[in-house]
Image 1 (cartoon, rainbow, N blue to C red):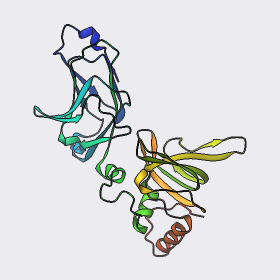
Image 2 (image 1 turned 90 degrees about the horizontal axis):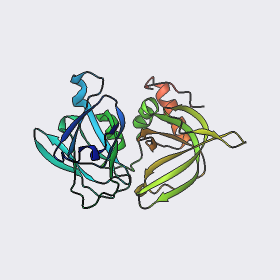
Image 3 (image 1 turned 120 degrees about the vertical axis):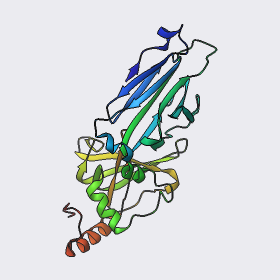
Image 4 (image 1 turned 135 degrees about the vertical axis):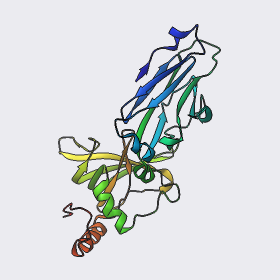
Length: 259
């Protein structure tokens, strides 16, 4: 969604414009912001399901010109301050905690300002997977791995080719060579080069200290703002063991064929 330029409302600096968005993910871009925007997220699902939703927003890297608030029954809670520079910072809140109120800040010049952010709506359970505040780098249990195989946006068998650390964004990028692709929601893993090898990148927190290692892993995870985010990633031989044990007991939540 792209809002009309604020310059067309120059004589109405206190105007408040409402926008209604039906998609579960997308972006807002507001050029030369003046006045305010009320962003109403109205996904095409039953209103009874709204209470199970989490909203996440990720400001554009160069977003400027407005503060972003969480608004409920007239009360404002500052979410993102104008000019705040936190690369890759994601802000999440429960759908029932309120809506988004984007208010332009007074500007001393007429230089080009664009306020913008990506947004995603997701189930509470999926959001918890992405933001495990208590122990984000904790190894998954056998049960968690087997469930991740069934519910993740991507499931691949592969090896770590390299790891690059992005200190400013506090993230690590895992460069993965794919040996077997079980599932992917988006085309993150693709054929590259004349050799016909499948490759892709998965992001995780820098604090997890991921390093290149020998052998194959089972990589699972979620797509988040167009990027693959790491979930459970046991060594492949360990996954084979836990899969066989669960299958022998009839406890596998889904079939994948791990060989």
